[in-house]
Length: 275
Image (cartoon, rainbow, N blue to C red; front, side, top):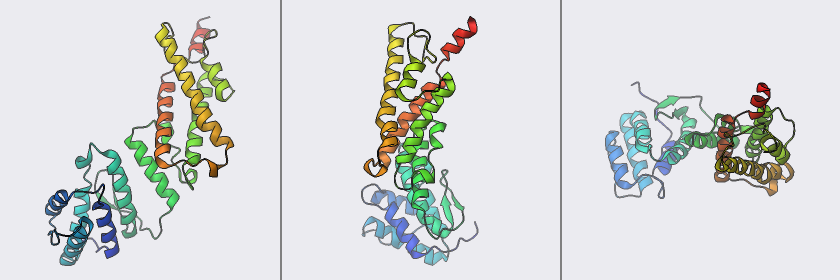
């Protein structure tokens, strides 16, 4: 591999702090193992984890006069095969590492390999928020219709507008499937009501269990609109703060709704087609 230009010592220090973070970073034993795998001498094993890493990586870069083995350590640390059972930690840590690497024109891909990118001089907090939110949602395997709301312009201050737009997308899908033009709880009642043939049905609605499922889904939709969409539509943004963990849970719920709607039967159209 061609020699990769040396990293600034501040980049190495920041990487060491992320990967050697006390609470959620690697254990001392894991650090020793990965340093060995990366051809990096563990010259300061008695120190705290991040300082131990910083000493080893900075020393190796000076010996080699290039950053190849430092970046090999990063790749080995964030090899996806090591973290198959902890995707949230993997995505969160890779996000932090990429913030740091961007100042050197480098990026760690989802496959755990280093690649070149345009060098950053500053990091947009909104872009960082959007990228991190999307990575977490991808790890949760959310519906594609939800991912499109992970946009920089929607998370400038917090996750308020991402949630707002995502919940609006549920009503849009119901209208598209049913041909109705109402909104909110009225739309839910009109689309899924048992009075006559409903516009949309989750199942055949023959058994009591199937009818209960339909009623429960209607209540879920009304709760989603009433709790999140209506609140976000009318409350000033500053009084309705949504943190990342809340946004992830809300958007996961929206994902579930989209999947159920994708499988819904357009009962009214089917019934009218047989007349």
